[in-house]
Every structure is written in structure tokens, then in C-alpha cells.
Image 1 (spheres, rainbow, N blue to C red):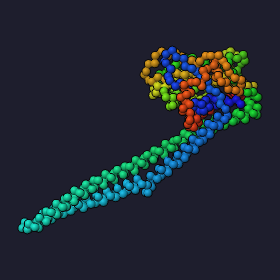
Image 2: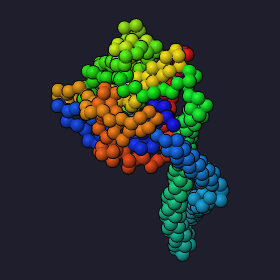
Image 3: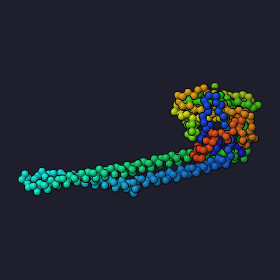
Image 4: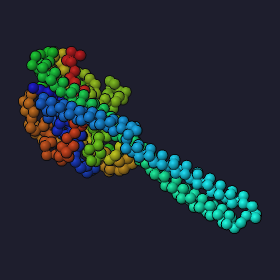
Length: 432
């Protein structure tokens, strides 16, 4: 069964290396030729495994949210231990305050009684009044100390209860966000699987509407020029994409595909949202955003041996951290008779992202690797990836990027998110 490049890329990102296809260490800025990578087509079983993993992650996230809600609700119960402790401390503080008030009043009463003694009061009576005042003042000091301690305990227990409630609320918020993220990933994985199953069913029923199978066409090449191997955050870089019909037959409708992805130096944090890719052509000179994981536009018909050029520009936000990126390109075609074809693989051009206001020095253009072709027959996956420029690309199995990315491939959330990244790239109806 032949699965669309949409799914091939989704599984390459979601099953084999689900973060971003980037090298493990940044290449030297000058004199570097990053190795291009291609994505092997996945099997239907791999997509089923990815969907199952995403479902499992979603189920766990939902269970965690329920547990977090139980904890949060408990914090508002009168029987919650921290609340019981805080209430007891508050009551003790109130009693201590009352005791201090009473003790202070006793001092006032004792002093009043002493002052009220007549001038001719005997010594015994005056001594007794003075002792009563001294005792009242000592009791007042003790009551004040007790109140201070009770107030401190009430404050401590009340703060502990409040902090616990805040922590429970934050934990619930995190759990809720995790559920939303897991659900998005699950939907993406399910969509990728559904697309593969639909295509499998379509192929069993006779293939494309025109009765023809979309075939891999190595001669339909997509070549990037002018993209430097080092891009500084906060700048815009212009380069170009040339799609060439290297066959001896005309193509009625040719579409170009482009996508950029990036991560920080660790390779574990995606920063795609800080990159903006735009395109422009002679026929459509206004700059337009390249929607993530979508065709740029219909180039139009291409005669045998003809090519079409697309202007591209990449803007990296100034807030982007130093990291690494990769630009993917490819081309597909559809004929009025229902036949269709596509470049066998996405071609990747790697580049370094240098921090804003830094000087990476002179950087060569990012280029794909060039070796002799060695690809399998239609409907199969070659062990040596095919370069759409006519050469093979370096096998990804030994790449340090894959080694690092494999460490991050265990999370079902990333599986689904990566599957979603390119699942929207659908084959266009040949009659459109």
C-alpha cells in the first residue's frame, strides 16, 4: 500500500523522531553543508500504534484531571485537615484576644481601686491594693504573649491552607491543559490514521478517480537556493525554490510544498511559532504566509523540462533562542486524465538559528547531500532515501539528530502533535 507523503512525514516526525528533524549539535557557521534528510513512508500499523499511544495518553490525562478535581474540591471542605487546623487556630486566637482584653481591664480596675483609696487608708489595705495591681499587670503581660503566639499560629495555619488551595487550583489547571493538549494530539493521530485507512480503501477499490496510482517521480525536483546555513534571530532572509519537471511529459497541474520547523539547542523545545515563512511569485507578487504544512500554491502546468521559481522569505522572531531549523520542500502534480505523481521524498535543508544581534560570520548556503540514487519500486520504502535533486540523501539511521530525537519519542502527546503537523497536506483532486 502506498501512503501519501502527508502521512509519511507525519510518521517520520511522530513515530520515528517526533520533535523536529534537527542535528544534535549546531554545525559550524562557515563552510558547512548540512545534510538533507528524507522521510520514509510509514506503515498502517505504525499509524495505528501512534493513534493507540495518543488514546492512552489522553485517557491518562483525563484520569489525572479527575484526580486533580477531587483534590481541589477537598480543599473547600470543612473537614479538610488544613482547614480544620486553621479553624482551630483561629478560635484559639479569638479566645486569647478575649483573655487579653479581660486582663487589660483587670489592670485598669486594679489601678482604679488603688487610686480610689482614701488618704487615711491603713498600710495593710494599701499594700493589698498594690499587690492586686501588680498581679493584674503580670497577668496582662502573660495574656498579651499568649495572644501573640495564638495570632502567629492562626496566621501560619491559615496561610498553609491558602497555599494548599492555590497549589491544588494550579495543579487542576495544569491537568486541564494537559487534557486539551492530549485531545488535540489524539485527534491528530486519529486523523492521520483515518486518512491512511481511507487511502488504503480507495486503493483497494481502484486507486485515483482517473484509475491511476500516484507514482513517485524523482525527476520532479524541488531545489532551494540562497538559504544560508546560519540565520540570525530578528532578521528576514530571502531565498528561492525552483520546481522542475525533469520528465519528458507535460504536467497539467503542479503544486509546491514547503514547511519550516525549528527547536532550541536541546532539540526538545519546538520554536516553530517564532518562524514565519512567506512566498511570492511573478504571477502573484504579493507576499503571502505559507500556512503550516500546506501547499504553497498551484504553480500551474509545466512542460517537459520546464521549471517554475517561487520566492521565499523566512523571518525569525528576535525572541527566538539559539537553535536549529530545517526547511522541507517537495512537489506534486495532477493531470486531467486522473494520473498523478510526486517527488518521492521531502528534501530537508538544515540551518542554524543564531541569537539576536549575534554575528555568525559568513555562512554558506544550506544544501542537500549529493550521492548516487538508490530507490525502491513504487509502493515500497527504500532503505536509502532518495533526494529529489537526483541523488540520495544521507541515511537518517546514523544521524545524531535521530539518536537525540529517539529519546524524546516516548510521549503520545508529541506523537499526535507531529502527526497533526503534516496531516493537513492532502492530495488534491486531479479534476480540480
